[in-house]
Image (tube, rainbow, N blue to C red):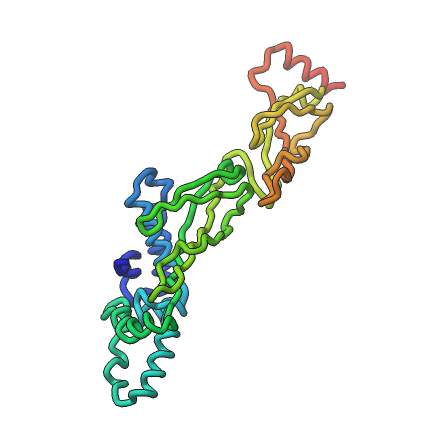
Length: 296
């Protein structure tokens, strides 16, 4: 796999502060977000690289290891142990490799790692190392998140088809085993971690498994009672309005909310706030009737 310089991906230098990393990530994530670049595979790949770079550089410990070992930062502990072991066997050769690997800006640690362990590891089977984990973000609409469906992700140039369960939460992370970076010396591949981002919906607000919305009713229906039509995720439904309904009054539609994650057939509730719409462009007769009501 080609080496990806995380600093170049975020368009910052190695001395960048944590705030600078955060600002660079937000700027580039907005620019290359799949919603802004639909059907643009190059932009999707760039977006994944930006998320991967931010995942490492925004974490002080990961960044420290990355600065020292580059793309092999996840194997830092194994390298240090091997270095110490080799040092005990060949103390006079310590200076041959001490401090010569500058990670992202210097030589490739993998070549040294392979030369140190590769052939022996292949024979003994004892030096297999797990591959690096990948991180990706998937943006969904609220309607998409309410239905079990399939999505295709492009991660490091590979298309991965996943099933998204209904009821996924905003910010929820799921693991796809074995879809990370290949291991070293026949070791297992890393995993893919997908973070879900649920877009704000213009009609519904979600809190847990419950949904909140507003519905307009005219003054006459509010006073006299009647019926109104309410939008739900499953379509429109008719609801009875009781007489003398007040502006801001709430009603609960049980089972019309969001599906419960991995519990088929279970749903939250939909809470509707009524907004009474006052009439405009009244006729003279209508005005007179309101005057009579106000007097009485």
